Image 1 (cartoon, helix red, strand yellow):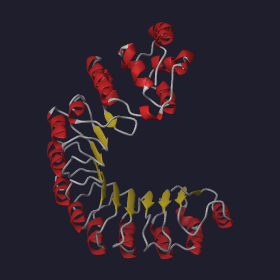
Image 2: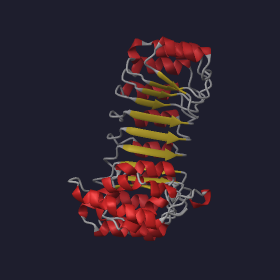
Image 3: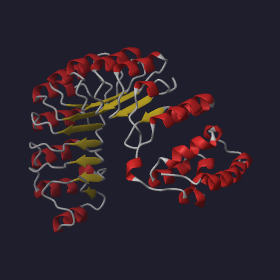
Image 4: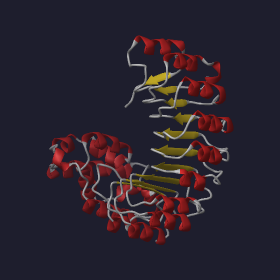
Length: 365
């Protein structure tokens, strides 16, 4: 992946003059030109097109014909190098406090090289939302970030192979007043008892997403009345403990129970009865979800906006017809049906759409 620097340098001077005359300026205008070029050159074409909204200078660079001529697309060059990211973070540190807003929320992803502790230490203390996906960060890196004055509101750890529950407990202790959202998915070294200990310190947490939890996790959550979003995947919690916990979740607006075989309709009825403001409900991959479950949803969820029934194979056509026809579900707008008895573009799918045109049928995997 290369860029024709002579042509780009000539055009960049012209666009720099245009930015100088504009009354709307951004902290990113102070970025060195070679860093902007290097950043954009590592992005895929679709992402380059989206960067036009960052600031006026970048918009004009992305519109240059010479910039696109210099691209040589190569699948082997799909990672953004950590060395360049280090330069970017240093440049942001040097460009003033206003620039820190661009790093207030950090989400790593497939377009970036894995983030390690050294790179993480460069993030400013204004960071509030940290999302790590398949990165090389350890407990020491997260502790260094928090000890540097960072008060996290969100910590998301997905496929992080080197992080343990100790870092989550540390964040819970240091950021207990500001912490609101916790996600822990597929992190092999994070023990459930450590997560439970951290949850007991998070009295003001509003959102939690966990995988492979048991009754112990629900027991730790049962005293947290501030929960608004709960996402449980592959849970082994029983109906008794689940019912005991959810009776205090009075502010719940979004609930996801993905592949929770030990639960039942009794558990669902309990949570729906006590949470009349529920707007988003996902029951995907549960064998116990049936037409009776849909009747409970129609009875209690008057404000429901989206319902996910993907791969709920026990759901029958009659139950779905009654669901979309219920006048009590006047706010329902999305219904996920992939892997159910309804096939996309089938006559029955058309019948459901005709029964309630306001409900959009989705068949996403």
